[in-house]
Image (cartoon, rainbow, N blue to C red; front, side, top):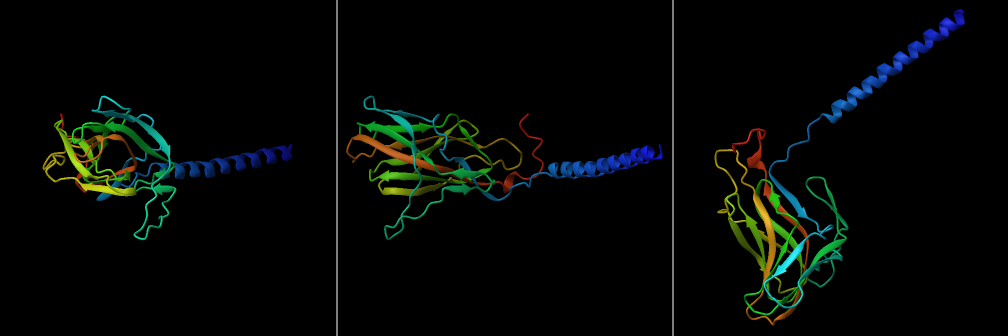
Length: 243
C-alpha cells in the first residue's frame, strides 16, 4: 500500500513539473509571436511584380490587324558588361521585405504596328497595383530588339488623373535595366493630414516610332520594382483623415 501511495505521489509530482515547464514554453512562444514586426522607414525597394505568375496580364493594341497577345516565357534577365560578357544574374533575389523572388519566367508581349508614330500596345496587370508610401523611382528589366519604340508607364493619382511617364527607348540589343524618376509634381504626398494619396500603377505601354519599319514587334519585361519613401508615413496610422 505504501508503495502504491509513493508511486502515486511521484507520478503527480512529475506531472506537475511537466505542466509548469510546458506552460513556461507556451508563454515564451506566445510572447515571441506577439512581438510586433519592425516598421520600415526610409527608402524601400518594393517589388510590384516578378512575373513568375503573369498569366492574368493582358495586352491591347490600337492596330486593327495582326496579333496582339502576352505569354509567360521561361527565362531571366541576362545582362552583359562593356566587354560583351554575360553577367551572372541570380536565380533568386530576396527583397527589402524579406520575400524571395525566383527568376524563372518573364513577360513576353507580341503585337503588330502599322501606323507609324501612332500605334501603341498597352500591357495591363489583373488589377491596378497600389504603390505604398511616396514613389520615387520605377525600375524594370526589358529585353530590346533594336527597335526605336518607346516604353512608358501609366500611373493614376488619388484624384483619378492618369499620368504617362516616359521610361525610355527599346533601341538596344539584349537585357537592360530601365528606370525613371517619378516627378515631384505628381500629387501623392499630403502636407498636413494623413490621407490615402497613393499612386496606382495602371499599365505599361509602348509607342511606335515614326521612323521605324512597321510590322510584328516583340518585347519582354521582368522584375518590376518601385523605390518608395516610407519616412513620411510613420507614426499612428490607425486613424485616417478620410472620413
